[in-house]
Image (tube, rainbow, N blue to C red):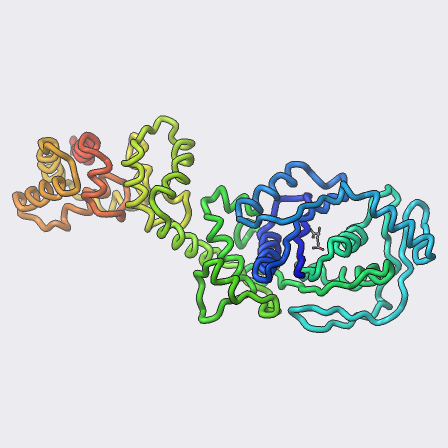
Length: 428
Ligand code: GLU
């Protein structure tokens, strides 16, 4: 029976590296029909915080990494005490003041690591190990070993930063007569410069990605590629597909470089393929928060979402793209005014505005007809007018079709923005 666990300490937010460890454990359990245990290692009373505890559970749920069993170590102190007494009474541990310390027996130790193969460590390097601290709390390794053994964890999958703990923990398993599990130490996530993943490469807390508008499905897809690959250079991988060929043994030994661009690309792909109504439900609260006064009809909003969903790397990008719909004044992107509105086209704009003001309906089709008629009357190229008009209406040089844009902006605002575009130049 495959039983694995993710064992975060609630001393900080769920780190992106922790999320990957959780994901690989979860995927291994799902792929093998096993059990995924979430165990909160809150033995450090000073550094553990309820806020982090809540956030870790929340982020796990948000990522879809649901657990089959849940434990928290602060509920299990009696158990750790019992094992400490047992080791003391068997002479395998001794007291040092109030602390309980394990006698380390000198002998080579073998670690069976599914990713790195067999690792032999000489215990000469290892000092006697503290099991219970003088304040009556267990050390991380002691509690971890007791729990992994009693929870019948078959394979301990965790970050490579724990590799130096493993031989010490094997000594504890042996001292207590527990079966030693298999291990898999995951390569660390590195920043693009080859250092350990830090804030410079991208946010480190899962919540930050959430507030920045990443979809959980994109994060999960991205994290599974950090150290593992489904083959064929495939990057967009569904979970069902991943579970079919996921194996711990295929995880790379080398560190995995974090690439924010790749994560953004995956996120854009998942946003693009999301049904517009579903995406609208995610975006609505963000718009409502930024523009409490906005009262766009649901159907219109969904239509706007549909127009922009192919242009977003993150959900937040939507706010940027559509500010012209929710703000009174157009905010111009850097340089676009100079590039597209420096030539005075007041006459052309006013003619277009007059004709649009007369339109009986204001649809993609009708605005296009008016536009074409205006261009014909002015005897200018379509292009001469398209770009300046888009900039005047949206503040941006790019975007969805101009007539789609006019239709969502509506007749009144389209007409007035065209009339006001060159107002600064009136007295020229
Ligand atoms: N609580 C430890 C940590 O957060 C768990 C390490 C382990 O998986 O054994 O790093």
